[in-house]
Length: 486
Image 1 (cartoon, one colour):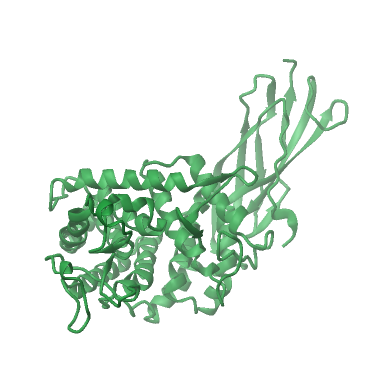
Image 2: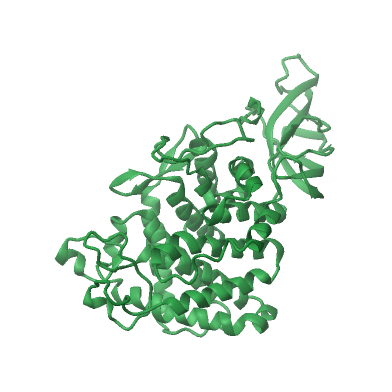
């Protein structure tokens, strides 16, 4: 790809003209450049490659394997509305529930406090003393996707007729056990007494942990609670504990506030960066995907983040993590926010739900399409990347306007010939547009308006013929305007 995909800003100081996309229609066929993301997931599922994790009772396996299968199902249901994906969510959800237990199997050492009556999942994988522990991040990561299933069913009466009983059982299990466990210790005062920091149960030391544990640990759980806040709104919701709803909102707001204290704004690229935790290390593409998805859904639900924040998160990917700009076709991402490689293999395919930010900046779709292209064509992306491919399926098939203005050129029709708008001059403006989706665009219609009283728009409409996938067109009909004396 040429440098035509680099961001360009051409603005005139004495006026502003806003180009607004009013109508966009896409063809029913995909462009030749990128795979059909939806079909690649369907083929992956038909091969049975999504069935390896959900019967495990190891929380690490459920979080870092199964959670991405569940994300894939949720995204695919949002993409095509096929209830197959809901059946899979219900099946896997009940499999996960059936594997829960109060204490681990015989022979695995555990703290006696684990035996508390709450069913759950744990692992000894991260323990220095090989002790079985249960983790906030694990519980939150896969429970978020099960809660999204419940949310979809609870807000649709027709779906509730078919899936209501299964959604009820999953929700009640999650509230009784996952919520019940962490609610019981959330406001613990052990922190001041013990001085320890842990994201594990029963070592959890209260809400003060938010200042110390890695962001992904509380963002994953916060995302789960965020969905529970939405689930609590329909009349059919029957809480296990009346006190939980207020607690959900308090904890999510605390987590958002803590996350925002860690965001660093880079004015040179208009983007956010942040560390893995407040006191440690450059973040990475995989863990940041959890945090970015949490922030995105907070914004969707009107909690804590603005559209400006979303723009800066989108720029984190396109202006900070995009390694080989401007090459979209073979796009690569830095593994780490420190922009270095710290792994024996590239981790850019772990970008996953970063693709949701395509709704904010279409270039995100183009970059991640380049990242996932070879994986999808080979069919070998596995669960680690399935939710990233499914995110692109969602973004493209939900018809987000994946076109963006890449540049504006001004030419004087009458005036002094400097091609800059001055009083008593008439100019034409041509917009160069890039299509970052994997569908061709049949037609594009732009209407220009201006809040500057000096600008008289003589020809406000502009149109463009077909724009192929991953192509840039400068052939839109010009917008014509006149600058009147101010």
